[in-house]
Amino acid sequence: MTHVRPNLRLYLANRTGVLLTPVVILTIMLGLSLIVAGFIGIATGFPLPEGTVVRMRYNGGALYCVPGFLLSVGVLAMNRNFSMALAFGSTRRNFWLGTSIGFILTSLAVGVGTVLLLGLEILTDHWFINARAFDVVALGSGDPVQAFATMFVLSMLSLYTGAFFGTIYRALGTVWTSVAAVGLGVLALCAGAAFLWKWDVIAPQVVGWEAWFFVALGLVTAALMAAASYGANRSATV
Image 1 (cartoon, rainbow, N blue to C red):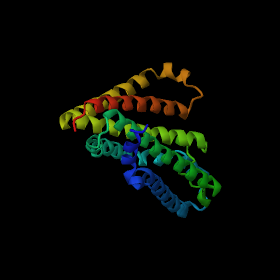
Image 2: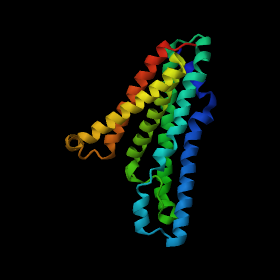
Image 3: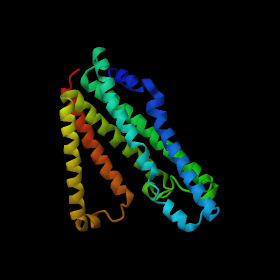
């Protein structure tokens, strides 16, 4: 752990960027959702009518707003810090472990931020106008444990996907990064097609899981991306 800690400090050199910025993005998404809800309320009256509330329960803004930023964090962590870490005597394994602990801290920040905003949303009776940004189906309809788990796993998946492409670029260059992106996209499409094709077989096995099924699926995918990024990191050049 002694040799891993310097790599963690290197990842946390910009604490604002890796810990605070994702929560700020969630807050911006909340603000935009409330602005939209306010415009709707001007036309329909306040608090928002039940029909509007039903539609807002399917607001997926929290799921869409942070992955892009976290992908870039993963890419930069594996490219910007790699040469510096090795120059100061770190091994590839310690660099990857230290960065991975940083990824966990970032994901914890996103999860905790989501739960705090969810709690504030419920405490204010949905921002006083019956609007919803975090008390939504995708985050467990007000369940703080599921909201935390969903955003934590989504963050880990995004970070490790970015790390995978960052290490592929470092190890093999631009061409193979493009090949990996296309290959991963084709693999995802094939997996989605197989999932839909066998849905009648899968559905009985996941009855009662609800959104937890997608949390588990995201966790498995994140683990695969972590393993792939570690493998690429072993052969990356400085």
